[in-house]
Image (cartoon, rainbow, N blue to C red; front, side, top):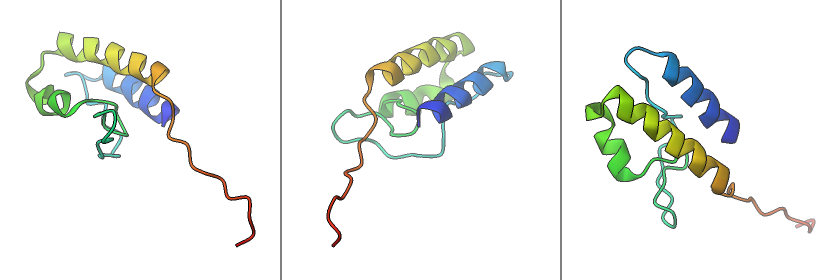
Length: 82
């Protein structure tokens, strides 16, 4: 997820108007409240289309900060042969 979101944000910054950080993994994490793909909150997702480009660019910085502080979801590794 880390590289996908960073890559999506880098591309979205180059678009006119500013593009979306959506990575097509649209599922809210019940614990954090962040989308598992783009790390936006439900309110940020709803507001995206009406945000100014300046606000969108600032939100990218917030998302990248979240990316740095949000631990990736660990998948348990099975050690038995069952």
